[in-house]
Length: 220
Image (tube, one colour):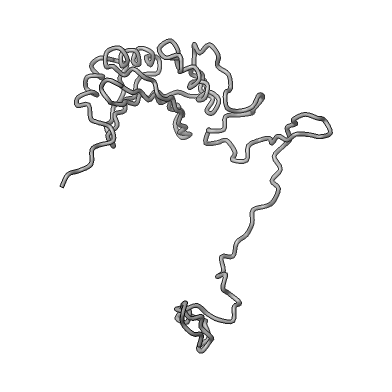
């Protein structure tokens, strides 16, 4: 019986080769679920990614993502997803930082990183040193806070609407239109003059109560 092929073809020995190539910038590596991940020093991210691009043929930067671990001193991970077109393989590179320590921009390696770094900046507040246009890209002008942080309130701080009186968009404190509802989770059949088949076994159902028969049957 044949087994299905892995989602990403393995590239044997790649983690050891990368570790030897980047030297002191290497912190940790892991292979799990057909994916290779390495953690490197924040200050060395540009050199590491250049090495992966030029020496190991990871030509494309597919994504830059952020992760928030509030329990850590350096609470943010910045994760770079690289693809090798010629080797048909992906690798993930991670650095750690906090609200104040800037991560070097990789826009000099991949211009598309400018947009991707702006997303991480907007949603998490991570600063990228050297990004030529580090502005918000998903939230509105004047938005307060960074919505993907774990300590950001689910309701946000303000809501916006169009004011007919002022003929413009206005911002106001969040007002929930209704309180959280209370549900009793009682049976929707409760109060009916009949019981469903099997309910007669439940404690509290009066013996001899009329029963709703299955389709095609008769009610007794």
